[in-house]
Amino acid sequence: MTVPPLASARRPGISRRAMRRTPYGVAAAITALAVTGLPAAPAVATTQATVGCTTSALISAIAQATAGDTLNLARHCTYHLTGAYAGADGLPVIRKRLTIHGHGATIVRDSVTAGAFRIFHVASGGDLRLDDVTVRGGDSPGDGGGILVEAGGKLNLEDVTLLDNTAAVRGGGVAVLQGATGVITRGWFKFNNADSGGGLQADGTVRADGPEFTRNHARRFGGAIDHDFGDSVFKRTTATGNTAGLDGGGVDIDLGTIEFVDSKIRDNTSAGTRGGGIFNGATLKLTSTEVSGNVIGGVGGRGGGIYNASGPSTLVLKGSTVERNSANGSGTSQGGGIYNNGGSVTLDHSTVRGNASTVAPGGVFTVNQFTVIRSTIKDNIPTNCAGSPVIVTGCVD
Image (cartoon, rainbow, N blue to C red; front, top):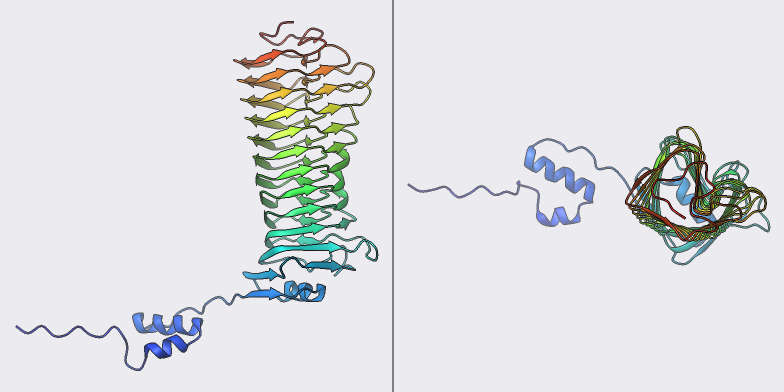
Protein backbone atom coordinates (compact mmCIF):
# COMPACT_ATOMS: atom_id res chain seq x y z
CA MET A 1 0.00 0.00 0.00
CA THR A 2 1.31 3.45 -0.85
CA VAL A 3 1.51 5.82 2.12
CA PRO A 4 0.41 9.38 1.22
CA PRO A 5 2.93 12.15 1.87
CA LEU A 6 2.59 14.13 5.11
CA ALA A 7 0.65 17.33 4.82
CA SER A 8 2.71 20.52 5.03
CA ALA A 9 2.68 22.18 8.45
CA ARG A 10 2.61 25.56 6.66
CA ARG A 11 -0.78 26.86 5.62
CA PRO A 12 -1.21 28.03 2.04
CA GLY A 13 -0.54 31.73 1.63
CA ILE A 14 1.59 32.12 4.81
CA SER A 15 5.25 32.15 3.81
CA ARG A 16 8.13 32.00 6.28
CA ARG A 17 9.49 35.18 4.77
CA ALA A 18 6.20 36.91 5.50
CA MET A 19 6.28 35.62 9.06
CA ARG A 20 9.76 37.04 9.57
CA ARG A 21 8.64 40.44 8.32
CA THR A 22 5.48 40.51 10.40
CA PRO A 23 5.44 42.38 13.79
CA TYR A 24 5.65 40.05 16.81
CA GLY A 25 2.04 40.44 17.98
CA VAL A 26 0.63 39.89 14.48
CA ALA A 27 2.96 36.94 13.87
CA ALA A 28 1.75 35.29 17.07
CA ALA A 29 -1.85 35.74 15.99
CA ILE A 30 -1.14 34.30 12.51
CA THR A 31 0.67 31.31 14.03
CA ALA A 32 -2.20 30.60 16.41
CA LEU A 33 -4.69 30.87 13.55
CA ALA A 34 -2.64 28.48 11.41
CA VAL A 35 -2.38 25.90 14.20
CA THR A 36 -5.79 26.14 15.82
CA GLY A 37 -7.93 27.83 13.26
CA LEU A 38 -8.99 30.34 15.97
CA PRO A 39 -7.86 33.95 16.44
CA ALA A 40 -5.35 34.43 19.28
CA ALA A 41 -5.76 36.87 22.14
CA PRO A 42 -3.82 40.06 21.37
CA ALA A 43 -0.36 40.27 22.94
CA VAL A 44 0.01 42.64 25.91
CA ALA A 45 1.72 45.78 24.66
CA THR A 46 4.76 46.53 26.82
CA THR A 47 7.81 48.55 25.98
CA GLN A 48 11.46 48.75 26.99
CA ALA A 49 12.63 52.31 26.61
CA THR A 50 15.88 54.17 27.15
CA VAL A 51 15.46 57.40 29.10
CA GLY A 52 17.64 60.32 28.06
CA CYS A 53 19.77 62.08 30.65
CA THR A 54 17.34 64.87 31.45
CA THR A 55 14.86 65.28 34.28
CA SER A 56 12.03 66.03 31.86
CA ALA A 57 12.74 62.79 29.98
CA LEU A 58 12.58 60.78 33.23
CA ILE A 59 9.31 62.37 34.37
CA SER A 60 7.74 61.93 30.95
CA ALA A 61 8.82 58.28 30.70
CA ILE A 62 7.32 57.41 34.09
CA ALA A 63 4.12 59.34 33.43
CA GLN A 64 3.57 57.72 30.02
CA ALA A 65 4.60 54.16 30.93
CA THR A 66 1.98 51.45 30.76
CA ALA A 67 1.69 48.42 33.04
CA GLY A 68 4.65 46.07 32.62
CA ASP A 69 6.94 48.57 30.90
CA THR A 70 10.69 48.72 31.53
CA LEU A 71 12.70 51.93 31.61
CA ASN A 72 16.49 51.99 31.18
CA LEU A 73 18.09 55.08 32.66
CA ALA A 74 21.08 56.69 30.96
CA ARG A 75 24.25 55.08 32.27
CA HIS A 76 25.76 57.00 35.24
CA CYS A 77 23.47 59.95 34.59
CA THR A 78 22.40 62.27 37.43
CA TYR A 79 18.75 63.30 37.21
CA HIS A 80 18.21 66.52 39.19
CA LEU A 81 14.71 67.13 40.56
CA THR A 82 14.39 70.89 41.05
CA GLY A 83 10.75 70.87 42.15
CA ALA A 84 7.89 68.58 43.09
CA TYR A 85 6.01 66.90 40.27
CA ALA A 86 2.81 67.06 42.33
CA GLY A 87 2.16 67.56 46.03
CA ALA A 88 4.94 65.97 48.08
CA ASP A 89 6.21 63.73 45.24
CA GLY A 90 9.21 64.45 43.07
CA LEU A 91 8.15 61.95 40.36
CA PRO A 92 4.77 60.73 39.08
CA VAL A 93 3.05 58.34 41.49
CA ILE A 94 3.52 54.66 40.58
CA ARG A 95 0.12 52.93 40.24
CA LYS A 96 1.14 50.09 37.90
CA ARG A 97 3.88 47.55 37.46
CA LEU A 98 7.03 49.33 36.34
CA THR A 99 10.67 48.23 36.14
CA ILE A 100 13.46 50.79 36.18
CA HIS A 101 17.03 49.67 35.48
CA GLY A 102 19.32 52.38 36.83
CA HIS A 103 22.62 51.48 35.13
CA GLY A 104 24.46 53.37 37.88
CA ALA A 105 22.34 56.52 37.62
CA THR A 106 21.41 58.87 40.47
CA ILE A 107 18.05 60.54 41.07
CA VAL A 108 18.56 63.48 43.41
CA ARG A 109 16.42 66.24 44.85
CA ASP A 110 18.23 69.53 44.31
CA SER A 111 18.38 70.81 47.87
CA VAL A 112 19.51 74.29 46.80
CA THR A 113 16.38 75.19 44.85
CA ALA A 114 13.76 72.55 45.67
CA GLY A 115 11.14 72.47 48.37
CA ALA A 116 10.34 69.43 50.49
CA PHE A 117 9.33 66.31 48.55
CA ARG A 118 10.14 62.59 48.43
CA ILE A 119 11.57 60.95 45.31
CA PHE A 120 9.31 57.89 44.63
CA HIS A 121 5.75 57.19 45.74
CA VAL A 122 4.23 53.74 45.17
CA ALA A 123 0.46 53.81 45.69
CA SER A 124 -2.04 50.96 45.98
CA GLY A 125 -1.81 48.78 42.87
CA GLY A 126 1.69 50.00 42.11
CA ASP A 127 4.59 47.56 41.73
CA LEU A 128 7.96 49.28 41.36
CA ARG A 129 11.05 47.21 40.55
CA LEU A 130 14.17 49.30 40.87
CA ASP A 131 17.82 48.30 40.50
CA ASP A 132 21.33 49.75 40.31
CA VAL A 133 20.38 53.33 41.11
CA THR A 134 20.99 55.89 43.87
CA VAL A 135 17.99 57.71 45.39
CA ARG A 136 19.34 60.79 47.11
CA GLY A 137 18.29 63.84 49.06
CA GLY A 138 14.53 63.26 49.30
CA ASP A 139 12.82 65.37 51.97
CA SER A 140 9.29 64.22 52.78
CA PRO A 141 6.97 66.27 54.99
CA GLY A 142 5.40 62.92 55.97
CA ASP A 143 6.58 59.32 55.50
CA GLY A 144 9.22 57.95 53.14
CA GLY A 145 11.94 60.48 52.40
CA GLY A 146 13.39 58.47 49.53
CA ILE A 147 10.55 56.06 48.74
CA LEU A 148 7.03 55.70 50.16
CA VAL A 149 5.08 52.45 49.64
CA GLU A 150 1.44 52.65 50.65
CA ALA A 151 -0.94 49.81 51.55
CA GLY A 152 -1.55 47.65 48.48
CA GLY A 153 1.72 48.74 46.87
CA LYS A 154 4.81 46.65 46.16
CA LEU A 155 8.48 47.60 46.03
CA ASN A 156 11.41 45.48 44.88
CA LEU A 157 14.88 46.97 45.34
CA GLU A 158 18.08 45.37 44.08
CA ASP A 159 21.47 47.03 44.56
CA VAL A 160 19.82 50.36 45.30
CA THR A 161 21.46 53.05 47.43
CA LEU A 162 19.27 55.26 49.64
CA LEU A 163 21.47 58.20 50.55
CA ASP A 164 20.86 61.31 52.65
CA ASN A 165 17.06 61.21 52.57
CA THR A 166 14.84 62.71 55.29
CA ALA A 167 11.27 62.08 56.46
CA ALA A 168 9.47 64.25 58.96
CA VAL A 169 7.66 61.19 60.30
CA ARG A 170 8.69 57.60 59.35
CA GLY A 171 11.22 55.98 57.06
CA GLY A 172 13.98 58.38 56.10
CA GLY A 173 15.20 56.11 53.31
CA VAL A 174 12.13 53.95 52.66
CA ALA A 175 8.73 53.62 54.34
CA VAL A 176 6.88 50.35 53.69
CA LEU A 177 3.56 51.03 55.37
CA GLN A 178 1.11 48.54 56.87
CA GLY A 179 -0.46 46.44 54.10
CA ALA A 180 2.41 47.08 51.67
CA THR A 181 5.16 44.70 50.51
CA GLY A 182 8.89 45.33 50.25
CA VAL A 183 11.68 43.11 48.91
CA ILE A 184 15.25 44.33 49.36
CA THR A 185 18.23 42.54 47.82
CA ARG A 186 21.61 43.91 48.85
CA GLY A 187 21.73 47.72 48.67
CA TRP A 188 22.81 50.47 51.06
CA PHE A 189 20.93 52.80 53.42
CA LYS A 190 23.27 55.63 54.43
CA PHE A 191 22.87 58.96 56.25
CA ASN A 192 19.06 58.90 56.17
CA ASN A 193 17.00 60.62 58.88
CA ALA A 194 13.47 60.41 60.28
CA ASP A 195 11.51 60.72 63.49
CA SER A 196 11.26 56.88 63.46
CA GLY A 197 13.04 54.42 61.21
CA GLY A 198 15.98 56.50 60.11
CA GLY A 199 16.84 54.05 57.34
CA LEU A 200 13.68 51.98 56.95
CA GLN A 201 10.15 51.91 58.31
CA ALA A 202 9.11 48.25 57.94
CA ASP A 203 5.41 48.05 58.77
CA GLY A 204 4.22 45.80 55.96
CA THR A 205 5.64 42.49 54.77
CA VAL A 206 9.37 42.97 54.25
CA ARG A 207 11.89 40.42 52.99
CA ALA A 208 15.51 41.55 52.88
CA ASP A 209 18.72 39.76 51.92
CA GLY A 210 22.07 41.49 52.16
CA PRO A 211 21.32 45.20 52.76
CA GLU A 212 23.59 47.44 54.83
CA PHE A 213 22.30 50.21 57.11
CA THR A 214 25.03 52.69 58.03
CA ARG A 215 24.91 55.97 59.96
CA ASN A 216 21.20 56.53 59.76
CA HIS A 217 19.50 58.52 62.52
CA ALA A 218 16.06 58.51 64.15
CA ARG A 219 15.10 61.39 66.37
CA ARG A 220 13.12 58.92 68.48
CA PHE A 221 12.88 55.21 67.53
CA GLY A 222 14.96 52.86 65.40
CA GLY A 223 18.10 54.43 63.98
CA ALA A 224 18.35 51.87 61.17
CA ILE A 225 14.95 50.10 61.22
CA ASP A 226 11.63 50.76 62.93
CA HIS A 227 9.09 47.92 62.85
CA ASP A 228 5.58 48.61 64.13
CA PHE A 229 3.41 46.04 62.31
CA GLY A 230 3.61 43.09 59.93
CA ASP A 231 6.00 40.23 59.42
CA SER A 232 9.61 40.82 58.33
CA VAL A 233 12.69 38.68 57.75
CA PHE A 234 16.17 40.15 57.34
CA LYS A 235 18.92 37.83 56.12
CA ARG A 236 22.62 38.70 55.92
CA THR A 237 21.75 42.23 57.03
CA THR A 238 24.20 44.65 58.65
CA ALA A 239 23.14 47.60 60.81
CA THR A 240 26.20 49.53 62.01
CA GLY A 241 26.87 53.02 63.34
CA ASN A 242 23.21 54.06 63.49
CA THR A 243 21.79 56.32 66.23
CA ALA A 244 18.47 57.05 67.92
CA GLY A 245 17.34 59.69 70.36
CA LEU A 246 15.18 57.33 72.42
CA ASP A 247 14.75 53.56 71.89
CA GLY A 248 16.63 51.19 69.62
CA GLY A 249 19.83 52.71 68.32
CA GLY A 250 19.87 50.03 65.64
CA VAL A 251 16.38 48.48 65.58
CA ASP A 252 13.08 49.31 67.29
CA ILE A 253 10.26 46.72 67.28
CA ASP A 254 6.81 47.47 68.71
CA LEU A 255 4.34 45.05 67.07
CA GLY A 256 4.36 42.11 64.66
CA THR A 257 7.19 39.63 64.15
CA ILE A 258 10.71 40.12 62.89
CA GLU A 259 13.65 37.77 62.38
CA PHE A 260 17.31 38.41 61.69
CA VAL A 261 19.33 35.57 60.17
CA ASP A 262 23.13 35.57 59.69
CA SER A 263 23.09 39.28 60.47
CA LYS A 264 25.08 41.87 62.43
CA ILE A 265 23.62 44.58 64.68
CA ARG A 266 26.73 46.36 65.89
CA ASP A 267 28.18 49.68 67.03
CA ASN A 268 24.82 51.44 67.23
CA THR A 269 24.01 54.02 69.89
CA SER A 270 20.91 55.30 71.65
CA ALA A 271 20.92 58.46 73.73
CA GLY A 272 17.78 57.23 75.50
CA THR A 273 17.21 54.53 78.08
CA ARG A 274 16.11 51.34 76.26
CA GLY A 275 18.15 49.31 73.79
CA GLY A 276 21.44 50.53 72.38
CA GLY A 277 21.29 47.85 69.70
CA ILE A 278 17.68 46.61 69.77
CA PHE A 279 14.47 47.54 71.55
CA ASN A 280 11.96 44.67 71.37
CA GLY A 281 8.33 45.07 72.31
CA ALA A 282 6.95 42.30 70.08
CA THR A 283 8.31 39.00 68.72
CA LEU A 284 11.97 38.90 67.75
CA LYS A 285 14.10 35.93 66.71
CA LEU A 286 17.85 36.18 66.19
CA THR A 287 19.37 33.24 64.31
CA SER A 288 23.16 33.06 63.88
CA THR A 289 23.23 36.80 64.49
CA GLU A 290 25.76 39.05 66.23
CA VAL A 291 24.68 41.91 68.51
CA SER A 292 27.92 43.67 69.45
CA GLY A 293 29.48 47.00 70.38
CA ASN A 294 26.17 48.78 70.92
CA VAL A 295 25.72 51.48 73.57
CA ILE A 296 22.77 52.79 75.58
CA GLY A 297 23.94 56.14 76.93
CA GLY A 298 21.02 57.78 78.72
CA VAL A 299 20.77 58.26 82.47
CA GLY A 300 19.67 54.92 83.93
CA GLY A 301 19.97 53.29 80.52
CA ARG A 302 18.97 49.64 80.16
CA GLY A 303 20.07 47.02 77.68
CA GLY A 304 23.21 48.02 75.85
CA GLY A 305 22.73 45.16 73.43
CA ILE A 306 19.02 44.31 73.72
CA TYR A 307 16.10 45.64 75.75
CA ASN A 308 13.16 43.20 75.92
CA ALA A 309 9.96 44.84 77.12
CA SER A 310 7.27 43.50 79.45
CA GLY A 311 4.01 41.77 78.57
CA PRO A 312 3.84 39.68 75.41
CA SER A 313 7.35 40.54 74.19
CA THR A 314 9.21 37.43 73.03
CA LEU A 315 12.93 37.23 72.38
CA VAL A 316 14.62 34.08 71.01
CA LEU A 317 18.36 33.84 70.36
CA LYS A 318 19.49 30.75 68.48
CA GLY A 319 23.19 30.29 67.75
CA SER A 320 23.71 34.01 68.35
CA THR A 321 26.10 36.22 70.36
CA VAL A 322 25.55 39.34 72.48
CA GLU A 323 28.99 40.76 73.21
CA ARG A 324 30.92 43.95 73.99
CA ASN A 325 27.77 46.04 74.45
CA SER A 326 27.45 48.59 77.23
CA ALA A 327 24.96 50.52 79.35
CA ASN A 328 27.31 53.32 80.32
CA GLY A 329 24.99 56.17 81.30
CA SER A 330 25.05 57.63 84.78
CA GLY A 331 22.74 56.49 87.56
CA THR A 332 21.48 52.91 87.55
CA SER A 333 22.47 51.89 84.01
CA GLN A 334 22.22 48.09 83.97
CA GLY A 335 22.19 45.09 81.70
CA GLY A 336 25.02 45.82 79.33
CA GLY A 337 24.16 42.68 77.36
CA ILE A 338 20.42 42.03 77.82
CA TYR A 339 17.82 43.81 79.95
CA ASN A 340 14.56 41.86 80.22
CA ASN A 341 11.66 43.73 81.80
CA GLY A 342 9.28 40.78 82.03
CA GLY A 343 8.98 39.37 78.52
CA SER A 344 9.84 35.85 77.42
CA VAL A 345 13.49 35.10 76.61
CA THR A 346 15.09 31.94 75.22
CA LEU A 347 18.86 31.47 74.93
CA ASP A 348 19.49 28.52 72.61
CA HIS A 349 23.15 27.67 71.94
CA SER A 350 23.94 31.37 72.38
CA THR A 351 26.51 33.45 74.27
CA VAL A 352 26.34 36.67 76.30
CA ARG A 353 29.90 37.82 77.03
CA GLY A 354 32.17 40.80 77.47
CA ASN A 355 29.37 43.29 78.12
CA ALA A 356 29.53 46.09 80.69
CA SER A 357 27.28 48.45 82.66
CA THR A 358 27.61 51.24 85.20
CA VAL A 359 25.77 49.20 87.86
CA ALA A 360 25.67 45.40 88.18
CA PRO A 361 24.77 43.25 86.41
CA GLY A 362 26.80 43.89 83.31
CA GLY A 363 25.66 40.73 81.52
CA VAL A 364 21.95 40.01 82.04
CA PHE A 365 19.26 41.78 84.06
CA THR A 366 15.86 40.09 84.25
CA VAL A 367 12.75 40.12 86.43
CA ASN A 368 11.78 36.59 85.37
CA GLN A 369 13.57 33.39 84.42
CA PHE A 370 14.97 32.64 80.95
CA THR A 371 14.76 29.38 79.04
CA VAL A 372 18.38 28.33 78.62
CA ILE A 373 19.57 25.64 76.20
CA ARG A 374 23.33 25.05 76.17
CA SER A 375 24.15 28.74 76.39
CA THR A 376 26.74 30.72 78.36
CA ILE A 377 26.87 34.08 80.14
CA LYS A 378 30.48 34.99 80.98
CA ASP A 379 33.19 37.65 81.22
CA ASN A 380 30.76 40.54 81.77
CA ILE A 381 31.52 43.43 84.14
CA PRO A 382 30.97 44.27 86.89
CA THR A 383 29.06 40.95 87.12
CA ASN A 384 27.47 38.41 84.83
CA CYS A 385 24.11 38.21 86.61
CA ALA A 386 24.59 39.20 90.25
CA GLY A 387 22.44 42.23 91.04
CA SER A 388 19.55 41.02 88.90
CA PRO A 389 16.23 40.31 90.68
CA VAL A 390 16.31 36.82 89.10
CA ILE A 391 19.52 34.93 88.28
CA VAL A 392 19.36 33.21 84.89
CA THR A 393 19.70 29.43 85.12
CA GLY A 394 23.34 28.43 84.91
CA CYS A 395 24.72 31.94 85.26
CA VAL A 396 27.55 32.26 87.83
CA ASP A 397 29.88 35.08 88.85
